[in-house]
Length: 193
Image (cartoon, rainbow, N blue to C red; front, side, top):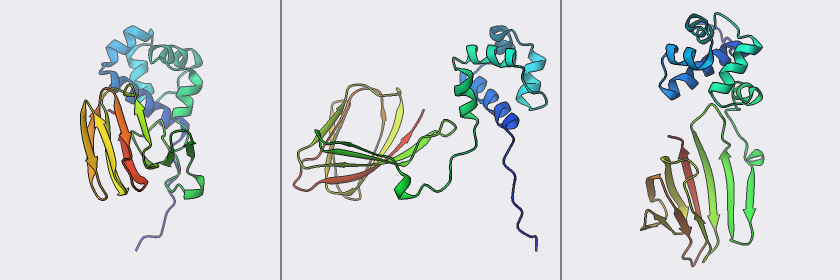
């Protein structure tokens, strides 16, 4: 039986190498295209993405320009992973007293991850409207825990009751309304496209 071994987290250079590869892949660019756009040779880019070479400040600056990021943002994206456990007392809560809406970030967003979970509560008669999708094609799964909520997506009203789950891709306006008589509490899983 093997003993328990603690795995050392990947170095900043290794995480940076992986992130640079992800950014290029997100755009669907081959190495030649990134080389053309950045002025960094294809072979250097390949070695950077494999973690065989650390970028110079000048190379990193060129890549940040191409990927439309500040260097501080890129470096923030490769900081250590978020904690796996987020205790309830550390989950940020935002309240909009005027609308009767409370939003808890159950799993706060992290730049390296695509999904997050929030908990929402609406008072009876309260509603919140969003004019646009924050990110076109954003996937949402809304699971009602208590009460009832009416969710309007693309001009279709869905009545979602306890235990029900509504799934949709958001490309336009949406509206959440609690018809009452009790408050509604629901979980939303948000997945970036």
